[in-house]
Image 1 (spheres, one colour):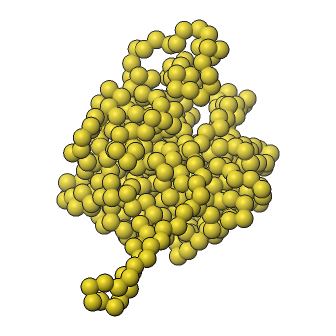
Image 2 (tube, helix red, strand yellow; image 1 turned 60 degrees about the vertical axis):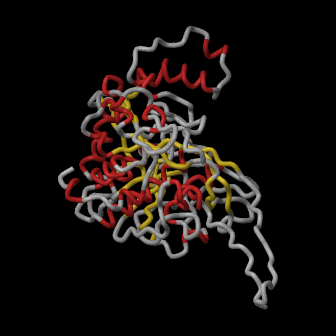
Image 3 (cartoon, helix red, strand yellow; image 1 turned 180 degrees about the vertical axis):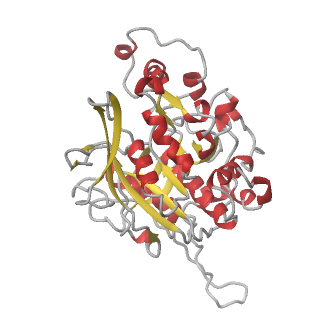
Length: 415
């Protein structure tokens, strides 16, 4: 199976600017007027989702499967790091004896979950997992004050049979993430997993691989892991791709369209992905309850131009939610500031962890509920009361953390 290089997020590096002010006495009061306080990082985003810091996530384990997370960064001071954190790669092969496809997870004992960082470079591959995790557990950028962070450095580059692992320059692998989460959760539960990578909510159609991928993903349901996935940054209408009879683009589209442009992406999905992949929210009635996909919205609450959207199919809309995903303040990894660097990040990669943090807080409050039930709460309580709400664009609405924390949990027992 061809490994595909995917990164769901787009990182924009900005110079940090200070905010100062002065004051003087007045009106007979000799005390100096204190300077105005600088706004809290991500204050606008947190206000949009009705989240008041800090949120609690006691006894909750959240896995961030990505391209490496620097847990030595100052943002994670005080965060509990799960001992199962590590580096993993995925391999699939054809077994000539059984004449079937097989897959496996390789645990690379010579590495750890830290980014594979080349000095002198600013790298999305190196910083991406750190950016994502800081929006969940970061002491100044994140939402959660406690809970446990489990870090999976996952890649498709490596061979189980040969014991090799080389993650540099390779994007994160959804399949390595799913295998890592399910194989590492039998003894100690994982509550939620954040997948900020493209095509995190699809698997290979059974007619293409004999059901191997579907069976691998089924373990998510068996372990009751709630998966929060970035919707993707390809400007794709998912209903058109997976739930319509739209014909393929005319021949020659590859030559006539520029790689990475919206119409090129659309033609690629119409000609390739719809034939090879099943979209979990649409095609899998059992597994879909353990998945939620996140659309990135701008400050005006409308989807960012790059964000994939659910489109017209209600069944797809039902598993999509929106969250801020433009110019969020995040920790990062870069030369000279490996443990202290910050950046501004844009993409569905960075909308997803806000939903993941909310899931952790809700399950921490309602401990008897399954992870799948918590995801349903987030969908049911999403805010639709704003100008321009459209389920084709926003799914079930914009995440509303306060509303989710105030449901009657008895309504969700058994889900």
